[in-house]
Length: 181
Image (cartoon, rainbow, N blue to C red; front, side):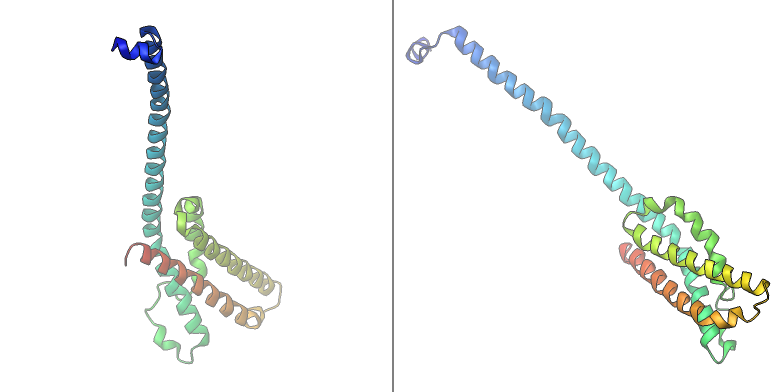
């Protein structure tokens, strides 16, 4: 070993310094790598928890969406069908899809947690609020003496109901597909 040191032109103190330098570099690398790896694991865990929360919240939203769908479809059928007798017992709200607005609005607080479903839910809520505003406007007009306001705006309500139904069905399909239903 002494001959190797002499051949390389190094003495024992120089070798010790090199070993210490290499050891320090390895220690710095470990000091950087371990926290970075832990941070990556924490991010993956957080992402997975967020996904599970979104899945659970979306499942809790499904019954409300099913009720809304029944009411909207009842309303559309009631307003466009020639035989409304076929509607008996189809919807507990008798086609009053506006009655679902308060419950849907209560879900706005959790909308950011819906993750992949948030955009579809936001579009549904916006459509619902727009329809609700149309109803409020029509009601104000009727109270102000324009009694045929509902009849004159019925086509708009049917159009909004169809739009709402489309958005609701899209959200329902998205949630069902995500859960393999």
